[in-house]
Amino acid sequence: MAKGMSLPGGLYTGGAVSLNPAPYVNYYLQTRAHQQAQEDAMYKYFGDLQKNLTPAGMDSKDIPGLMERKNEWQQHMLANRDKISRPTTDKGAAYTEAMSRYNDMMAYIDRSKNKMKNIASVRPIVNNPQKHDLLTDQTWDALHKGTLPLDHPEYQDFDPNSIDFNPAPFSLKDENSIKNSLSLIKPVEGEPTRKNLGNRTEEITHHYRLSPDQLYAIQGQASGQYATNPSFKAKIDKLDDPNGDTYHALNDLYKSHYGKDIQDKGDFATAYYLSLHPGIKERVETRTIPMNPWEQSAINLDRQKKFYDYKEGQKADKATQQGASVDQFINELEEKAKKGGNYPYEHSTGEKENSYDIGLTPQLEKIFSVKDVSGKHTLQPDKIRLMGNGDWMVIYYQRDPNTGQRLGDDNKVAIDKDLSKRISKEAVRASFGNTLLTKKTAEKSLSQPQTSKKQTFGTGGLN
Image (cartoon, rainbow, N blue to C red; front, side, top):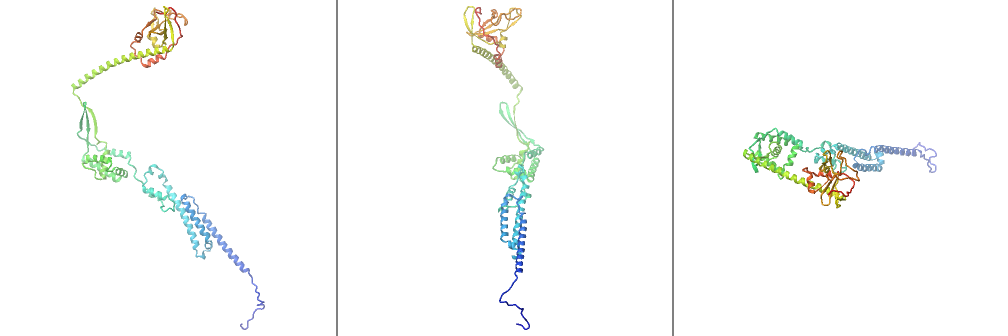
């Protein structure tokens, strides 16, 4: 022990030491509070970041990928919360990893949104039937890959500026435009070909040819179209099949004008142009070979004789048809009368005979109308009966010679024996005269019978 030094009294008190723990407790509590504040700040910071991780506007096929990344990110933060809240402990490695994962998710979301935006920009084209059908195979392949999930190994970002179309189909309008252009090139008609078909007729084939200058001009137009018009080029490439019927037909046409077979696409395009020329197609007509005057006179006489024979034959046919029509009309009247029932007819001799009432029609009233004794009045029959033997009985009632009115009433009438008569069917048929009864006339007559009460005649009837 150094000289001159002294120890404080009571330094040793039987081994008992007295310490004050308050500073140490305060230090621990302060340190723990600082650590908790750091953790709270971390949770608040990353909680705010998590609000940005929303799938709004994303492709639904990409949302599972976002959820998987978000779950991995949260697990990383929970496992490394101490390091993330106190970056100095691992030189910021855990924190840097957490932020990298977050930025990756934000980029994933933006990429999915951009994918939807790019696909939406081409939807009007895809939904347009005309444009839809013109998209190239490369464009369809790019669209397919651009709509896959972002994590798919074949996914590729779709660039709307890369859309490419096939040329529009060669239309009827395009074809007509070529025809109008070619119509200005006028061909020259060559010597026609004639073929005798017999019977004084012949077939004439007209041939049309183009000059060398005209052929050269057509070839220039066709080659130019093939080189500059994608639609026309696609049309020619499709038709240019040596195994097809079109190829052989166009080759024959080309050879007939240029004297050689098709050699290349330009020649084939020229052949197609020729097929559209409205003025070079062969025209075939059939005409009658002219006759000399003597031959024409002989034919005219023969025609006159045939016409005369035809008219005479028509007259005979008309008479036959007229007779058949009258017979049909009479038979129909008689059949209808028989269906109406039997009316007994008693002759003046007391003999009774079955009869049938033939309903009066305007046609019959006209045919059997007569003048009365005075010659002043035209009388129409009051009854017509079909008798049992087939004869017709045409009956007229007695009338006042001054007025022409019928004598008696419906229940009691007197028959005019002078006018009433019984006639045979042949006479009935002759009574119709030369007027041709058509089916329509007969039907009209039969449809308008005159109704009458059923009457019987006693003694005093016609003999």
